[in-house]
Image (cartoon, rainbow, N blue to C red; front, side):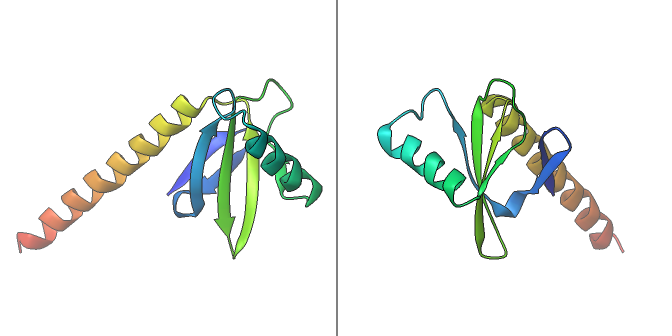
Length: 100
């Protein structure tokens, strides 16, 4: 499944390592991590509006940090919703196989 993170960006669920609220993740270590990602060209600014969340994703053994204006609560709800959809689909699909 994919999660929409804003401005036509979507990430594969299985590649997402974490979704972090920028306001509660303001330690010096976090600031340095985000700055280092920018220096390594591993940071993707999904939106230049007020940043609310950063997402750490690994794909093809490469780490990227996506910085977005979508709140972590909205992204968590999307992840939960996608997970429930996937779970419901599998239950329905498997129930059909067991009937026959």
